[in-house]
Image (cartoon, rainbow, N blue to C red; front, side):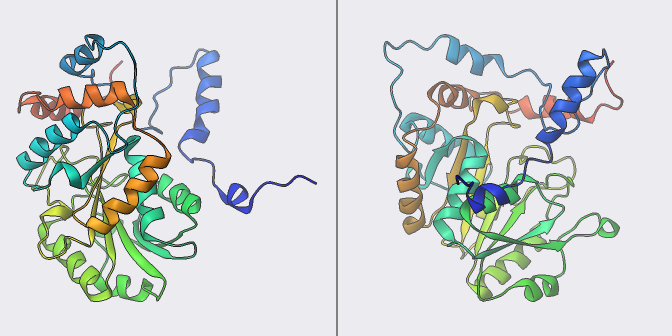
Length: 301
């Protein structure tokens, strides 16, 4: 008798995407639907980025380098330098969305049965990525009473076992919106040093800080081999469909390992790399405009 794998049976349907059939049915009935279940911006994708794709001129749509186009990685270095992150093109692997960066990190850093600690509420698909990689998520609760700030260090200590290999944070947080402070990031630094853990930092919403200053995990000193940055152009440039992300680390052994996964899937999307590269040349006030739009009150008619 044919059977489905345990991994396939354990894989949860997306709690975000499972609402889609209900929305589609409502639309067919003539009901206006606001898609609050999925993080799809309605900001127009920058024209400079779209034009770069429209005006691209090549005869063959070739594979790119498995790490991504060198020209794009060099431009990303410029972008990261502007936000205080000092990296080289060799420390960046372009991925098929931030999702692939997270999955590559899980697969490269953890064996089946290993554990990762994630403060909850957290992005629902972390669960799916963990199951794909055979990794066990150990959630620790952040409280609405504290505005979803970093849970106490004691909660981390209680959750850490011999199988714990990493901590994942999303900063600013999806779905809570909480921005981890420099002092909270230093707490995480002490934990990963003490217990010799990886720190995976999902910084998809880096630009969308409305109060306070963003502290990247890559701003932390003395933990270069521990820190992994997972990034994406999806929300930054309202380009979710491009499926372009980045895996960034100064850990040479880890980047070499992830490169093998990148080679196995051949290359990231070509047109979207062109789009992402062009978007880096947007004026510095671009994000002021988008943030102002998001801060407007009320729901559009």
